[in-house]
Image 1 (cartoon, helix red, strand yellow):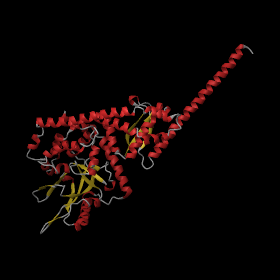
Image 2 (image 1 turned 90 degrees about the vertical axis):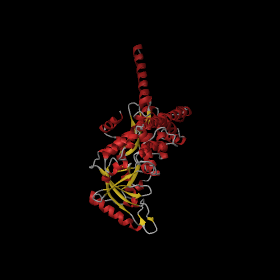
Image 3 (image 1 turned 180 degrees about the vertical axis):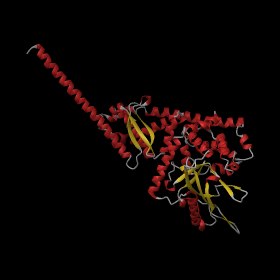
Image 4 (image 1 turned 180 degrees about the horizontal axis):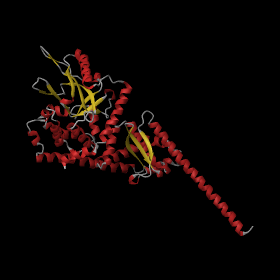
Length: 482
């Protein structure tokens, strides 16, 4: 055989070997990818067994040099965790364990998904406090031993030596925990310093004194249905300078709904009124009729004029968070706090269920020769921006809706006192009939899983609207403070 032929034969064998190795390597790589995808699918199926709250998404790249992370979106009216990963994490599945463990820990702890979504939103808008809280929680939750072990079980066939690779990635846990803890403590101090600065500036400049010197106080404006006057007053008292993005944009939406209500998009709901906590505002008109207004407990429990009590919108935020080590102050936490204890709350509770409302009516006041009503049943029709499901409540069976701060007379559809316990059913029936006559809405008992599912969906839709405040509203309100 000639040297040329021999060389050709050798080269051919080499090429064949190289091609076979390449094909075999590709097959191994593809098998690894398939195992990763199967592992992720199994993990998601486990988490979503009872409700779809997690999904995965492959992306071309991620910020800050990451190859896998967790974010949140609203999907099908539910806050949903998204485990994002790129091709590097697909080739190195050990990088997926940490975000998987984070999601599992959060899921098992049943922590507020709306609160966490608010935190993600504020962090994306540049809040250092939210960013510090997220970083601290990510380290803490993603290193839970049980969650890490469970996450690895879905990827054990996707790569060799998974345990050792994950251990190497998590070797700096203590250092990370300490660093994020210190960053959180720093952010905590910065937030509280801003609170003190605002209080000091208001005290030194006496910026609110002119409002409190006005002849017509907040309650006078409310019963006169002076929406523009109330909106302007709230803009002066709300602590905009210390609010994160979500809280500020939602309050701006509520203020705009006070100033210019949308009567084409309304909610109808009922409330059991208790005179121990509900201080009904009344204005007698020349024709003998009354205008009624209602306030949340943050305004009714304090001293001084109702205008001065608006200062509690600032101080109450501080008191609610005194025992909390979180740096950020979340509006959704205020929703949850209301459901846990409505005293000193910025919200007024309502429900779609008349039977639930009847359980909150104040009892009659018995005197020597008379009996006085201890409360009544209130029905309202309000702009749906200002009457929304309490998506953070753990009491879905109550179908609780929240209204911030104030009920105006033109929002009252019916109010009837309950003089005796035995009158309760009759009064409820009378209110339901009046609501139907005036609005066309029939209020019925809301019970069972179907009602709770509708409530949950409505809560997600309301939260989405709060996230998506039109830009013109934000700009219009912000002009007041520039």
